Amino acid sequence: MGMTRVSRTGLRVSDAVAGCPPAGAPPTATQPTRTAPKDAGRSRSYLPLTLAGQALRRRSLPGAGPAPEVICSPGPGPGSDVSRSGAMVPSRLLSVGPRTVFGGVGRWTRVAPGQLPWHAPPRLLSASCADLSKHQEPPGKKPLSEKKLKRHFVDHRRVLIRGGCGGDGVSCFHSEPRKEFGGPDGGDGGDGGHVILKADQQVKSLSSVLSRYQGFHGQAGGRKNCSGRGGAVLYIRVPVGTLVKEGSEVVADLSCPGAEYVAARGGAGGKGNRFFLANDNRAPVTCTPGQPGQERVLFLELKTVAHAGMVGFPNAGKSSLLRAISNARPAVASYPFTTLKPHVGIVRCDDHQQITVADIPGIVRGAHRNRGLGSAFLRHIERCRLLLFVVDLSEPEPWTQLEDLKWELEQHEAGLSRRPHVVVANKVDLPEARAAVPRLRARLGPSAVALSAATGENVEALLLCLQELHRQHVATELQRGHQPLRW
Image (cartoon, rainbow, N blue to C red; front, top):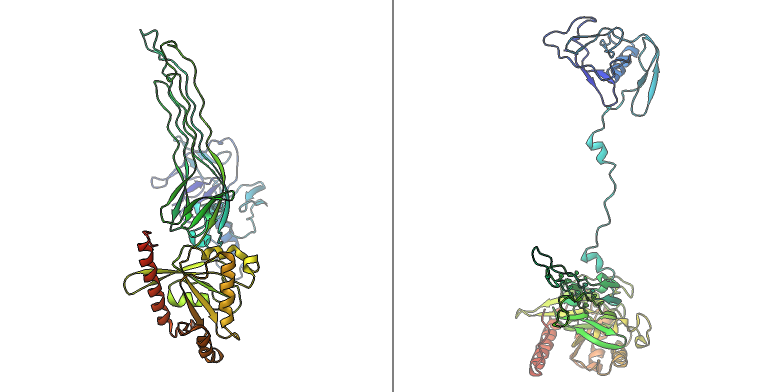
């Protein structure tokens, strides 16, 4: 059964090769008819593009059989017949004169009378949705996850914070039929929203804190004594242990989870003319605008909050030790200054207690004078109530490392080196380090714990000492009336 379809470009293409009626035959009962297009007055030539290319290739191959007959139906005009119902009947195979046919997407071919275009089978005339979907614009930039934000550790930030402005009051009068003197009914404006800093345990760095914040403004008042809506409170999530400074003055210490501090207060809303109604002024027209919000410049400093902090020189094995006693996975390498940001690991004890241990980046001699990584990471030790001095046994005279570490801590803050501590002698798996253990204990006493973070040798002894120090710290805090830190 022959069928003719019209493509989007206006070309009529035959859908079948065999079974078409001869030229000039009337349509049968089983043969579908199509109505004539709008441009019935024109004489146009139509070629089946795909079938023509297939037939042409079969003719050009040597020994190939006869190509199938290609029937092309022209548009209405001379040589074609249109029935009374408006159906067009094909009457000839090819047009006589030269013509230009569509040879593919963006290509036109000049065809002589009685010839077929020499080209490969073109693509379909209609573009599908699948082709268009390949050329869609790339999606926008996705926000960074918390895992990626922690790669860029930031422990200090300067923030400009403005509270929301209050809404303006309205001056208007009540209007009602048969009530000439309705009186003033202008409502007050809403108050501006506050900006509050809130400590959150899920935030590990100040990298997600922006440099400028603006609170939500209050809405203006309305008629019929309607007050404007107040601005919502804007919360800024900061890590636990954030110190808030204004200039050189410490204004807040967010050392507990959920602690809040109002960084900037919103402005008060304006008063409508209803507020100024008095016995001597029955028709006031006065209204006041909303007040601007508070504007402050604050400096945020992060001090890592942990029970114990590991202090040592670069490449002493602090990160390897933290991986051995907790599930934390800081970077480990054979070169110094591998750790460039503090890492906190959680040690789970047998009595269902959790002890947090912080891996502080390596400290060099003269760190209190801003040498090496400087004093930027010394402030993270201030929060730690217990200290783990990690010394490298592979170095000559390892006991001198402990003296230098205590000197740097004492120069940074008086009394910092006298906190409860444990001396950890690492890298005991090396032959030269194992030979230095008796000399170290002769200098520092038998309380020094010799272990190997790489092989896990004698790590249990360190956990027992750490658990005992934590138990003593909790008892001391409870005697002073303070609530100990809990994770």
